[in-house]
Length: 152
Image (cartoon, rainbow, N blue to C red; front, side):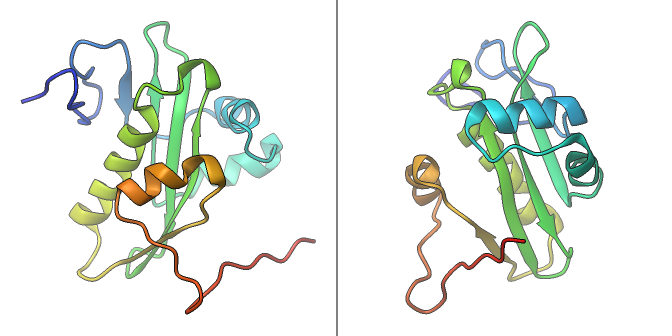
């Protein structure tokens, strides 16, 4: 049973009487672009966002009482063993209310429920999200492995 301090992350159910509702779907392309921009993630165009919204292994977003998308996150994956958490974003006007944790908890529950045994779950952790990711059990992989990027 949910209490105000233990959000009910089931789809479409407000947690503990709050006005935020998690939806087990991607936001619209426009909302995805807006949430990335306002949360400080690198900006993306609608042409880049369309495939991201359409082709993720799991995607969820949170709407406020006015129906606006205010948080989101997704998992890229092959459905077999590799899963990468991406686009964890919360509108700054709605931060510090547990929405990032709610999104992450739902996404990780999807891996637990839908993935075969022994999944490998990764993410690239920008500084603001690191405390949340650590609290959920993520650990740094260096020096064994190190995230790298190729910019074109």
